[in-house]
Structures are given as C-alpha cells and as structure tokens.
Image (cartoon, rainbow, N blue to C red; front, side, top):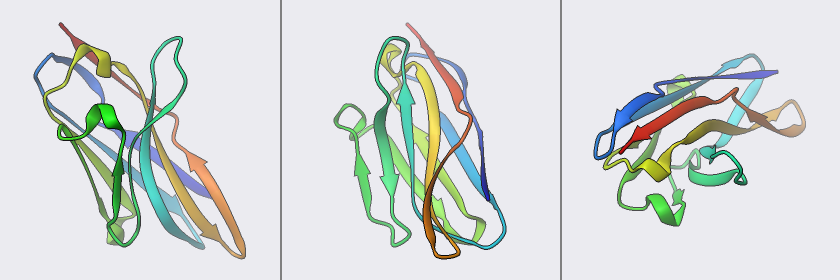
Length: 119
C-alpha cells in the first residue's frame, strides 16, 4: 500500500504564495506520475498540475504561469509552488500518485489540504 501525506495548505491573501508538499510512503512500490488536483465547493475535481518521474509536466489552464510543480524522486515527494494566488484558487487540493505495486498499476489519493485565498 502507498500512503500520501499532504502539507502546506492554509489561508493567504490574494497575490500571496503557498507551497504544498506531498510525500508518498509505504513498501514495495514504484511511483510514476504524481500530481495535484483541486475541488472547490459545488465544482468537479480538476487537474492543477502533474509531473512524470522523468520530469515532464502538465498544467491546468487556469494556473499556467503561476504554479510550478516539481518532485524529488529520492524522497518520493512532489511539491506545488503557488504564486500570485487568486480567490478562485480556493479549494481542497488533493495529491495523486500512480504507482506500480508488484504487478499492479494503482492510483492513490491523499486526504486533501485546504487552500483559502482571501480577497
């Protein structure tokens, strides 16, 4: 099994910055793509950013140029640097990881961390 633990959420004023972290732990796994999704009240969960274990990245249109995803493969950790935050970035942010566990390819989610941007 793989556990994902997120940290770094909180309350920030518009224009401010936050950095989210997500660490994967467990035994007998190999992490592939890691990413961040978010879900605001009354809305569907959407992609924020994702990164492959080779470093290729993909961003949601609304965060391009403001957010940066990175990862430390040695620590099985993914980071999301969020700059120029807007009130519409307010949501619960979920870490996601695809992992090979034995001969299975599985998908894992963290419990979520709240990000609130005040105007």
